[in-house]
Length: 121
Picture 1 (tube, rainbow, N blue to C red):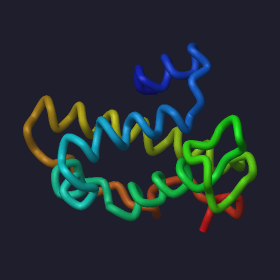
Picture 2 (spheres, rainbow, N blue to C red):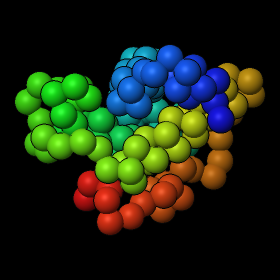
Picture 3 (cartoon, helix red, strand yellow):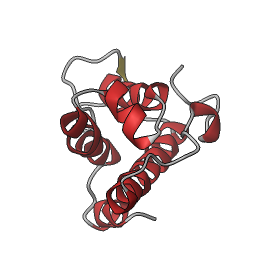
Picture 4 (cartoon, rainbow, N blue to C red):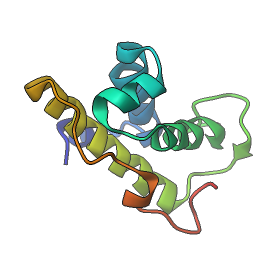
């Protein structure tokens, strides 16, 4: 498990907050866009878009990232697991790129991640 994930769990930081930090500081702001990040870190844009959608468009008044969202409900266990798995993969890939200067492969695709009937489609 990535150190950021452990820290988030110990500090009781909601997974949505950890997701937002990873997307905004780890991916989007460093590279200018998710498409650029896809080329650098080998994370399909579909994965990043799904992560953004789940963290931004789902949640309650306490857990949601956005005040106005499409799905006013708690995250399903599948959505929480998806966010955890993607964050761990993102941390590993950012570290691998930082250490080697090369794009991690193979690409991380939606098909490589846990999904289920409880994952926002």
